[in-house]
Amino acid sequence: MPEPDRYAVFGHPIGHSRSPQIHRLFAEQTGEALVYTAQDVPPECFATALRVFRAGGGAGLNCTVPLKEQAFEAAQVLSDRARLSGAVNTLWWDRDDVLHGDNTDGVGLVRDLTVNLEVALTGKRVLLLGAGGSARGVLGPLLAERPEAIVIANRTVSRAEELARRFAALGQVAACGFAALEGCRFDVVINATSTSLQGELPPLPDDLLAPGAVCYDLMYADVPTAFVRWGLDHGAGLSVDGLGMLVEQAAEAFRIWRGVRPQTAPVIACLRR
Image (cartoon, rainbow, N blue to C red; front, side, top):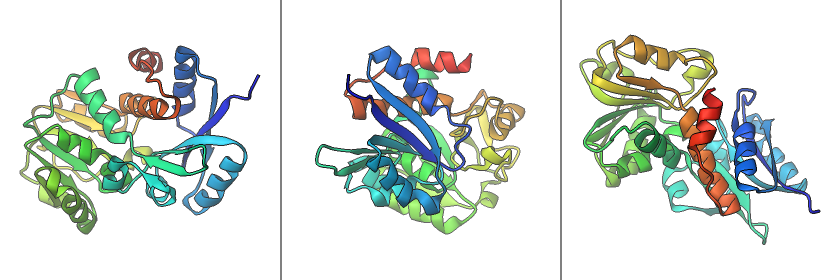
């Protein structure tokens, strides 16, 4: 019997990752033979870890914070959505040992919001907090839903402005610092910063949310993140973490790697339990 194909997630930190459990459930559901592990890879070790993983028979990788832009640079062939975002979260080698890169984050976020949570984005005012690799990965698919506008807020305003310019052809995108959010109201607020991993928050005004607004944290944890708690405390109609997005982006990566898309609802339900 041949050895099962090897996959992994690289990140730093990585101890909180649910990806190995998710892909094990996908494999059981679909009958695919694979092994999926998590590896803590600091940014300065990424290139070496990538070579070692491939030399050991690795078939594909997911990359999470803070490695998505390095994964973009490492890929020899990029999908259109990866090229646009400048960030990669899914890597795989083909039969000719060519390394391909894609970004499934945005697909995962939009599917969780619009399908699982039944949140319409069309015509809504959306605030995206952060301008790093995670924000880059979700902007294109968010704009494809035709919101009224997306505002990117970041501590370093120039990074938000660069991101707004990059995606300007796809819809109404603006950039600002956090102080400029005073007096603004949004229907959907998405936290794409990594502050939740430290139990912290971006500096947000108390009256940021429109009536019935949705707060969505791309990060996830066993207990509500600081941003999810902030949303609940400030009157959000819905305030959730990114576990559903994690499962949905993983399902898209699984489809790319294995040619079959697993069902996500039972996996999300299992993880929530």
